[in-house]
Length: 179
Image 1 (cartoon, rainbow, N blue to C red):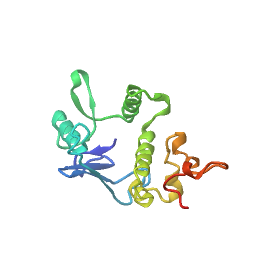
Image 2: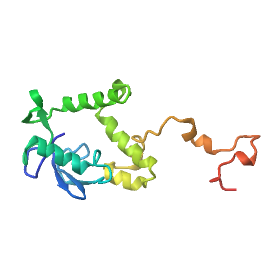
Image 3: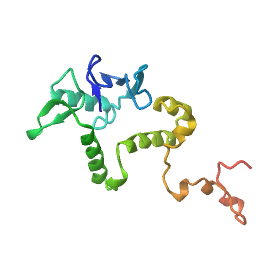
Image 4: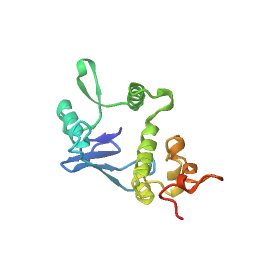
């Protein structure tokens, strides 16, 4: 939430909006509280899904807010006017909970941290190499990353679903099983 529109601000980093995606550069983060270096993350554009494309959404926000410097995420006042002040942390927490409620989730079980865990879980379930996920997330070791991965609680997703039970015939075994 402490991002600026350009380098040189007082936030923890800045966002560069490009045609191919967003480049988020952090001077300070959870894993770099002392601002000893920079972390750079790429978020790809999704031109085939403009309603969900980070580039389109960032450009629309900056155009609507009418600012090219200072805080990237700003407070919104009465009549949806954009204020020059940063969006307070508690507002982000509230928006995450409202969004969860809007899609039918238990808002009490969701927070800003859920976004990070959800992203890392989604990457893992999409088959992204865990080492790439670890590098992207900044986790010091694989054990710390694994704590964030929360696979769905679907019986079919259980590793037990891929096993043959005593007495089952070979026809019930998965096509991926090694003979």
